[in-house]
Amino acid sequence: MNHPVTIGIDVATAGVRALAVCDGTVLASAAEPLPAPVRDDRGHSEQDARSWWPAVKTVLAKVTGELPGRGGEVAAVAVAATSGTIVAVDASGEPVTPALMYDDRRGAELNRKATELGADRWRRLGFGVSATAALGRIAWLSEHVPGVAGIRHTPDLIAAKLTGVPVASDWSHALKSGYDPLALEWPTEVFAALGVPEGLLPPVAAPATVLGTMARPIAGLPAGCLVVAGMTDGCAGQLAAGAVTPGSFVGILGTTYVLKGVTAELVPDPTGAMYSHRHPDGWWLPGGASNTGGEAIAGQEHLAELDAAAAALGPAKVIAYPLRRKGERFPFASADAEGFVSGEADEVELHRARLEGVAFLERLALDHLRRLGVTITEPLLAAGGGSKSPLWTRIRATVTGLGLRVSPQAETGYGAALLAAAGVLPGGLTEASEGLGKGTLVEPDERESAALAESYLRFCTELHIRGWIDDELFAVVRR
Image (tube, rainbow, N blue to C red; front, side, top):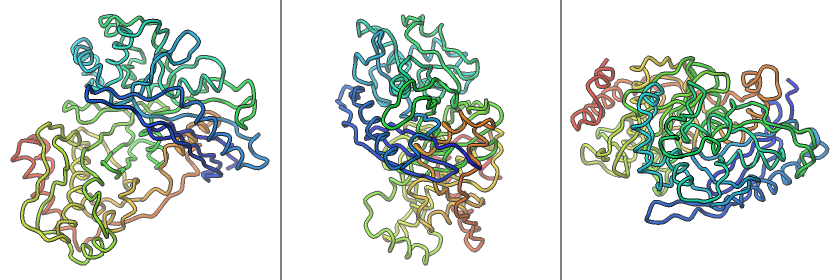
């Protein structure tokens, strides 16, 4: 294919990681830690934004140093970061405050006002303004910090360092700051009502847009290297997993379960459980994140032995909703939801029931999307640490009735490298994704299908009795 060498940079909460990729193959990678965020009981969550650039330079130097004779071939870089992290900058683009992290709540009251001020706009988008949305924190910074010349997202700051000039934000990182990806505009009426000057907000471009060119070599990158707009960590990970074109979806089973995919048109969700980023090519990226997931078995010892015993046991007789904290956000939203087990079980059966419970949540998420009119093509892609368990993946395939293809490469940095390539190649993201590995396909186990289908109905009945899923969704389940 002769794709260019590109580098994806992942600025996560705990550290920075970069990957050099060419023709689908990772050529080199490196990581560097970041200082831990400082959090307090007021809901404040901050990180030193001045630590980002030195860490990025360090990982770039390490990666290019592992490309003997090829560092000068790097054609483009792109940055992915946490969704909703922002920082106030001065006229020269330097931070004047710590970064306010994605979970900072000091703008909660302002977000409540924004919900009312932009109600019609949010309704069209099927998007809710949460208590931790960056929109409210932008208003808070404007009101409380003198001398603020602009608000930037993490990638904006890094890209400006690489190009030497201010750059546009991408519409993925700007989403939780209030950017309207349908109208392709900032909600100026909302910001004006909150007292935020329009000049504080950056211009916005589509992901995979070339933002600028490096005028001089930096950390082993050559002058002339393109700097390309990235996407949030979740969206970049989705692309890396292979969910790139309409109908393709990936279930990411990490600490929590996340379902993300692609639709040709915007599909608003009246329940607010699902929301959509916008695809670089103008399609849409609907998805949602549960509070349930791999955390269900976190801390459990001897997992391999338990998996083997649970595989031999077969479908559990008890039903478990393995939610470890109060409240659920996807595939249904309920502040009152709590985990439960329907009966008595020994250690092995309880382990099996927890694995099945997460699979039931995945099936319910798919049913929720189907009731909204979303088409999901087979196979369902799978990623995340939980997808490394052959038993769990087989249970998920059997419960959903879909083949699951376990993605070999679903890292955020890999997705950012794909976006960098998309900024260079004439075929954009579709051409950049041609080298993605296919991964292992796991088919449903027909011997367990009937028992798990019965258990899924019992699981959803329990949710419905408790008032956590509505009549319409329960009717879809029963069909």
